[in-house]
Length: 446
Image 1 (cartoon, helix red, strand yellow):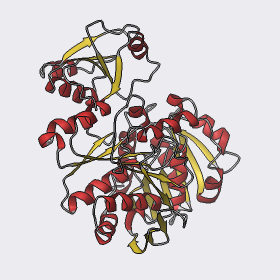
Image 2 (cartoon, rainbow, N blue to C red):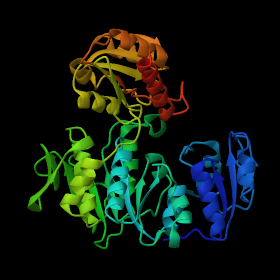
Image 3 (cartoon, rainbow, N blue to C red):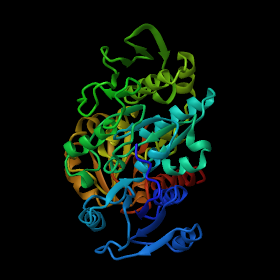
Image 4 (cartoon, rainbow, N blue to C red):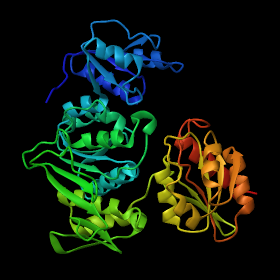
């Protein structure tokens, strides 16, 4: 595996992954320069204090220099002018994930998918740590893998890195070879970047491309997803609700086809038909890491989800308020509706990332009382959904919250599950969820 040592690297992007990549390049005997399109105030000085060269360049011109490597942050699409220019110059382009993985000496568990990745990563790492294993989270979850390489003793020797991997990171990842790798699900998302569902799905399957075909690696897929890309010699296990899956989540328990006596009770956050397949995957991976069934059951039962993922904020006047701001695709909104099941006042909208607006008609009709629309997407969503149920164009989150509150009755749920990106009105999905929770807290103080 390439170590990417003693390289003269140009880093595209001054965010966390760009900084981690630059520091790792320096730690391994190379030189690093970071270029970005919009430098936040003080960021160049902050990086410069670490000895990192900071460059300014127009979007149309890639900086000149004796670079022999480009490390692209996930936000840089392949058609960005700097990426095009790098290819034209014959420069090798990799992701920060590729760089970090080349220097990581510990075990790697990797999860990709359209929704639910972060919850799986957190549950895996929490459970491993609770039962005495050295484990850390990395990747798209929050801390770049390159940063973990720098902060973990002996480059992570003896530590399990549980890595959340995005399709953006996989665009420029070549030799990343997790011992255990899983695609949690594939649903329409990021089509504004990848163009078609087929291209997006193919990018997800790149997770398996470099797994070692020596019998040590395992790949995990839901039933129904083609195993294209999984290397001969890599064991494949299926998970899901179907009785023929290797790991089945059915009813209130997880079972294993290869061990009919095994039964892992399923309680807590994952104990519903939508999230139970993720619990089956967690059980499979933790078993491979040596945990016992009772330990896995406790890890699932004790799991505390991240904020903004089906987070129950409060019950006020008999009305439940649920923050699922992380639902940034319509398939995630569909899942949120299924989990609650009935009497939902849905707040949706933002910046659309997909074109098919009709596939969740059944869930809207069965589970929602009305929809309260916000942001850039309110008009197309209104046109698609108003034949199905009452829709209200509210514009802002605050206006949608007040309208939903005025309409809601005891026993109903006001659900923020936007189905869209947040960047038309917020700095990110967390800021949107925080704004929703602020409105709920203000309501409780009235």
